[in-house]
Image 1 (cartoon, helix red, strand yellow):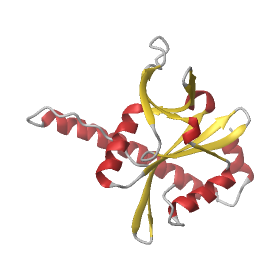
Image 2: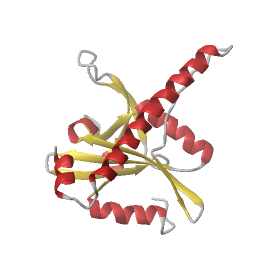
Image 3: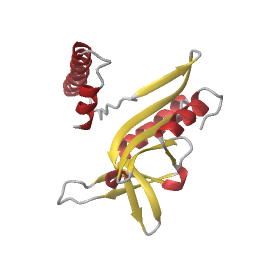
Image 4: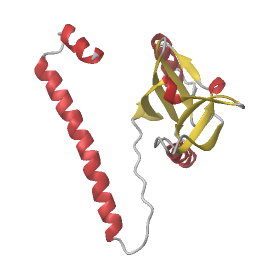
Length: 182
């Protein structure tokens, strides 16, 4: 409700512009579904057996006509993204997706960063890290009974930047615009 309330009180965008934005966003989601189904049909029609996986980089950033980085952007609750065990504290994300990004980075030499907006108990903060630089371990975790059993990538929390909104802008500047690569 908070986001809808913000639109109510911030009238800087006319309703018809907001409507256009949300309609286009919904169509983008539909187009992705349609594309995935067409790929599945193409796989079924092919002569051989193929394993097809579809993933999108949420943002591909170019600076001065040079591709600087890709970003996987997520919004997760703190109790979902944070994981602890006897070995330490971790940030937990989808393992198969992470392995695909690792392969993408290795083949293209374009780094991919995870940027996770976390809704925590004490408010919003961001996790940011480089797939190229962050050590990772993979593990099957969760509950089969509750439908949460899956393959996860676990990145040690001390290797992940925990940022406020103000710090996020400065860190993105450092990674993308000031010559640093994070």
